[in-house]
Length: 284
Image (tube, rainbow, N blue to C red; front, side, top):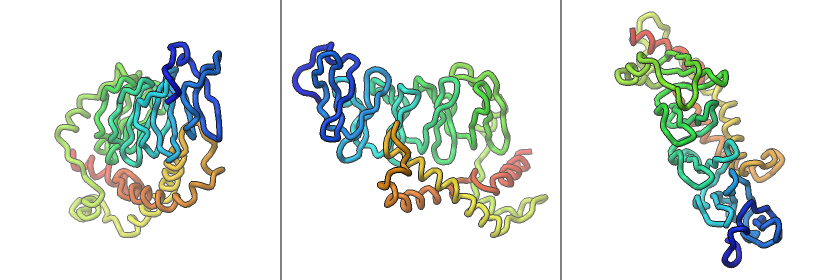
């Protein structure tokens, strides 16, 4: 927080200043200190708040007066669409607006931006969609969701793909058959696929070498996910993590966790296609 009681004009559109390699906020016209220079980082979010990093390298959100809107306790932070902030540790990311309102609860492994005023969420290897207003549009029940164009969405579920056009947060709905599948079909995980393949006619047995392909195919995604997470730990709007040396001791531990997550992912690697074919065969 800053020093003393602040007049309203002192907190409008403050500017950053630095002192002793720390950052604070002050009034541009009067040079009055609003927030003391105690933070390692100050990243603007919208017009009224800032992502901050304290001396213990934890992230949170403050307003223009220095009041804490989101507790400064998270290992990772990012700014999305200039007016939202994402905070989390490993698998508990949540999303806030610039006023500190929690739009997306802290229960997702990933939260990314989609076209049309939507966020893509990822939890337990399943994808879902949440609107900018925090409304759940699609529950986390889908194998994949992506938008090749600004108005087109591809949704994968139970081995089938659905293409939706003219998609945005207000118009997105699911085909009726997809809704019925969600109510009636059970998921088939990778373990059951490998163990029970011999009981399925018309398909060859998945060999141990096939599974090794999946194991090795997870190396590159695990590396990319590791770099992404370590970059998030540096906060938004920073120089590339590879320029810094602080990431090196963390890399093997984060990589091991990301590699394990990628290998476990039932939708990852060369076996996913076979798995989807089996699902379609079972549903006929």
